[in-house]
Image (cartoon, rainbow, N blue to C red; front, side):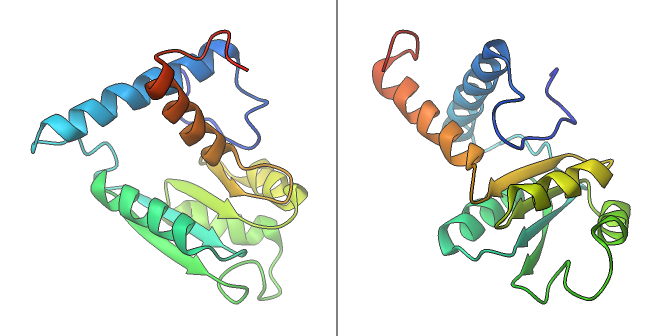
Length: 156
């Protein structure tokens, strides 16, 4: 998939074709998940850092369960004392995280903080929410709309 290994920071970095690919892939994976007990585990043997500087029960559960169901190991770093607050620079913290984790998911306040993490990370960075953007929620909403109407084109 052409999106593999890319960051997801705002949705602005996605082309309409990328967006259509993500929605179609999500629909296929959801059908596969519902239809079979032999479910794909694309995150097998992978660790994913989930950093929640802005706490949310729903977001934490969604990501933690999804990572486990897809075969990965979620590394949950919750609250202010979990990352980025021990006097180390963002760059140093990211360099440690990427040695152990195959992806960084970050829920934080400032979009600039997320962008700084992505600047230094050699692994994909996913925005789980900032004060400016919530791309994963938008993707989930678009999937639901597509499932309900059968398409996204032309809808307002």
